[in-house]
Every structure is written in C-alpha cells, then in structure tokens.
Image (cartoon, rainbow, N blue to C red; front, side, top):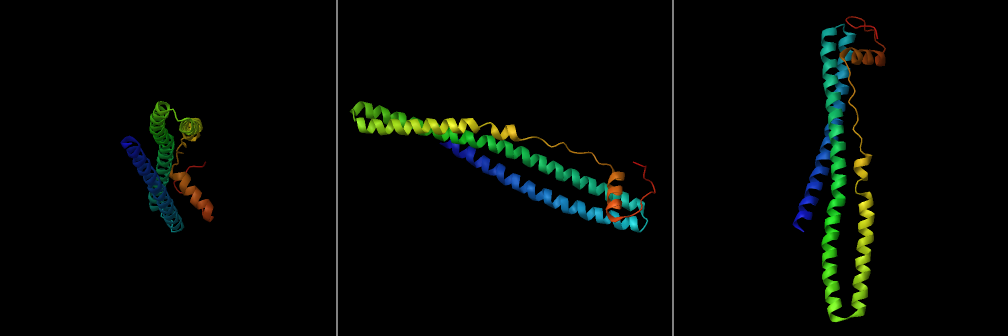
Length: 174
C-alpha cells in the first residue's frame, strides 16, 4: 500500500512538473516573439549589430522552448507508464485480499460466498488484462521531437520577410 501511494505521489509530481514546463514553453514563445520585434525595429533603424544580438536572443528562447516541450513530453511518457504500474500494484493487493477471502470461503463451505468471491476474482483478472494491454502504450506513442538548428541570419531574414524589410548587410544569400 505504501509503495502504491508513493508511486501515485510521484506521478502527480511528474504531471505538475509537466504543466510547469508547458507554462515555461509558452513564456519562451512570448519572449521569442518580443525579441523578433526588437530585430524588426533594429533592422528598420539600420542597426544590424543590435539586430544580430536580438536574433541570437530569439534563437536562445526558441531552443529553450523546444527543450521545455521535449522534457514535458518525456515526463508525460514516464508518468503514463507509471500510472498502469500503480494500478497493477493496487490490483495485486486486492487480489491478495480476494485469495484470503477464497480461503475462508473454502474453509466454511459457504458456496454462495465462494461464488461471489470467484466472480470478484475473475473481474480483477479482466481489469488487470486490460491495464496490462495499455501499460506500454504511452511509451510507444511518445517520440522525441528533433530540435531544429537555426542560425542568426535565418532568423533575421525570417523577420525581415515577415515585415517586408530589406536585410542585406552582413547576411549571406540563402
């Protein structure tokens, strides 16, 4: 019982951490967009050095967001695989109690009680089979996104294209 409670607590901690990572990823997206606006303003003012710095900041925020999302997905996969484990432990404990009940029913010779206990026992097996079938499913579904590599020039060009600006100073033709 103690192991099951600890496991459930850890699963809840993983889910809480996962939602914290989601919030952090959203904040990084906002910060990245703010840095891109700074790139736009710097390009409009002809200050390519500042534009480059802001583009580097935008890239850092994009990578941080991607790392948060990847970690969130991995935590989700772990908590998804631990959930069925906790349920399996709970079922194991319940089945142990049912076995004790079966033993007492056999000892007393009460066929009605024996029949009811066997029915509950069979239902536990059905539940365990269903849960075992889905135990590894979350891990199979999870895939790690590959973090794309962006360079400063591509971000500057992306922002310039988005706002219809000319950026040619210090940029190589793509």
